[in-house]
Length: 110
Length: 112
Image 1 (cartoon, rainbow over the protein chains, first blue to last red):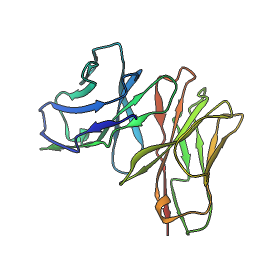
Image 2 (tube, helix red, strand yellow; image 1 turned 90 degrees about the horizontal axis):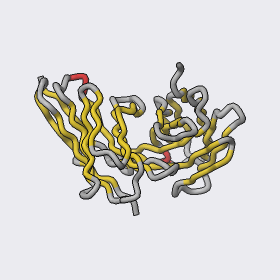
Image 3 (spheres, rainbow over the protein chains, first blue to last red; image 1 turned 90 degrees about the vertical axis):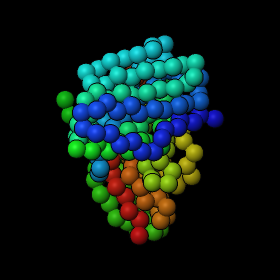
């Protein structure tokens, strides 16, 4: 069945880059997503990548996709304290539902 | 452009009662999906509605149901509430092309 895995915690210093990793098992995934959740809030769509792409850059965010290894990463450049949140990766095949990872708690230290 | 609106934001119910949650999607979006978020199980898909029809359903008991109206607004209902139903219920809306899903702030349901 479908499974998406992420490490639970990541701490970085303010100004450094953060790299959050994700692996998935469904090779038929069409789109892969990154969402951010702050305390008490819903999910904010950060970016997504189509499965035939290797990389996508959007301001401070860079998404890398290694389809052979089924590995997705999100790099946040110049990480700020406001980036502290839980980051979820998710995959979707065709018009089906999103399948989420367990989330990575990013803590940005001053 | 208004985002996805979920009401109410917080709800406390007693075991055995039923509850109805509401979701108004982004204007022009016809697909509405519901997810349950708990610390133990994470984010789990409940169901998806498109043009008033249930298109997909997750692995939840029949106590969980939903519907969608002609204006694309959706409601989900949970009957005979159990303590384990305490969760954040999130609604997401998508354009018919279905590439991006935008979430509301969620309804925090506490069952006591």
